[in-house]
Image 1 (cartoon, helix red, strand yellow):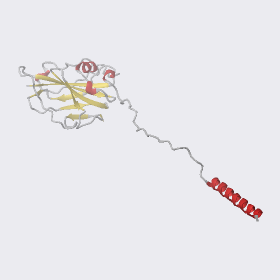
Image 2: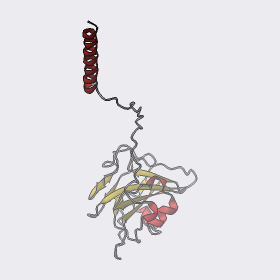
Image 3: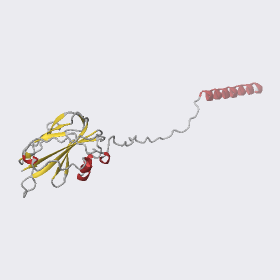
Image 4: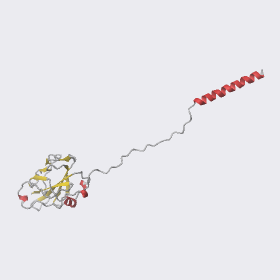
Length: 213
């Protein structure tokens, strides 16, 4: 009886070992502890703006843009003039300089963003249709002069908002006083075209002056 009981215990132990062994064969293998990853936000790499800087502009003294309009205004009168790129294509910038040497950017503006143009346009109708009126700050002078500069660049000018009178004068080749004293009294259109030299420039220039009484 003791021997028979011993055999029964041995069989039970063997069955238990086999059962555990089989269970271990089917159990999933332990995996390593999960890594807590912190995803960093993806940030775009800042790209250099495509275009050209003011210091890289060179008109070569060649003026090809045509600006036409009245040269005489009374205070409060709306100002209007025609810009003709003469089939040249590029990005247009319209800048004014008053008798104090202050510079202002008329185009592009929030109502009319920068775009590549070519052809004839009326300012300000075709450039956001802003209300541009003649003003005269000088109370002791008979009339006050304002100069309009039009720059047609082959590439966008990335730092145009930083332009000053010295840079403007350098870009247009010193052509900052093209209108004679007799022209200003006629109130006629003006078309400056000094395109007699080879144009190796990257910008075309137009200049227009008007006087406010």
